[in-house]
Image (tube, rainbow, N blue to C red; front, side):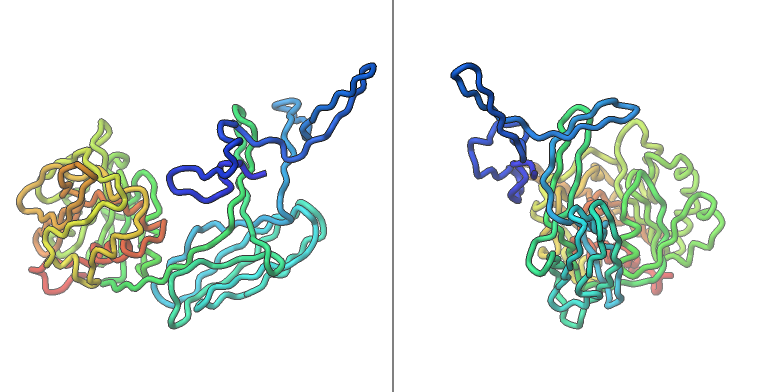
Length: 403
C-alpha cells in the first residue's frame, strides 16, 4: 500500500515507472471486491474498494482504506550512529507484528561488532510490539557503512510511517529500514564544553558524540560556575532571539573569553525578536545572506589559518556530502579585528564570506558561525564534525595554553 510516487528512491523528482498513475492524488485501492448485478438481461459489474469502518466518541464513524502490510515492520529512533572511538553504542530495534508469528531479524555490517547479530522474534499474536536492544561497536578497520537488516534471512525489513490528517486520506509509507554507522577520523582538544540552548537543535548531543562532556548552561549556572573549566561555550541556534537573559551576561562571557575561553555563537536571525546585535567583543552586523546549495564550492580565503589545520587538517573533501544547505544568516559586515577564513556562494551569486568569523580577544577567542551545523551534525556528515572539532579546539595564538 505504498503511495505510488514513493515506491522508488528519489533525490529531487519522484520516480514513477507507470505513467498511467501520473496525476492521481492517491493510490488505487490495494484490495477491491468485484460486484456483479443482473438487471433483466444485462449483467453489470463494478469494483468496490475494501474499506474498514469503525467509530470513536470524538469523530463518530470513520472509514479507512484497507492497507496491505508486510508481516512485521520495525523502527530505530536514530538515523545514524557516530563513533569517535571504539566505545560501543546501543540502539533499540522496535518491532511491530502484523501476522502474530515468530521469525528472525539478521543484523550485519562488515567490520562492525553487532550483538546480537540475530533477533529471535517472540510474537504469538498480531498487534504485538517488542523492543530489542542491540549493541554496536567498530572493529579496528571499520569503515562507514549501513547496518543491513533482513527478515527471515532474505526479506527486506521496512519501517512504517502513518500520515493521519483530517483533510486527506490516511497514508501508510514504507521505507527500507537502515542505520548508518559512521566512523569518525577526528581529533579534538579539551574535554568539557558548555552549551546554552536556543530555539532547539541537536548540536549538544553531537558534540557529546565527539567525546566531549557537555554541560547545559542556563543563566544561573552561567553566572555562578567557574567558566575557566570549559574548553568552549557554545550557543544553540537563535539563542539571541529566544533567551532574553543572554545579552545581560555579555560581560561574564567576554571575561571568560579574555581569560582564555572560546565562545562560539551559532546563527541568529536578523528579525524583530533579535535581542541584541552586540554579541561579540568587536562589532559585526547580521544579514540575511545564506548559501542554499549544499554542494557550493568552499574557498579557503586564509588557507594557512589554524582553523583548517588544528587539530584536524581539513580540505575540500570535508565539505562533500553535506545536506540541504551550507549556512544561513551570515554576518554581512564586520570589524577588521575579525578574520573570515571561509567563503562560498550559490550559483551566480557573489561570495558569501561571513559564515565563519573569528575574533581573538585577550587570551581567548570569539567565533560566530552561520554554518548549518544543526543540520549537518545530526545527519552524520563527517566533514562537519571535523570542522566543528576544529572550532571547539581553536586556540588564540597569543595564549600558550587554553583551559
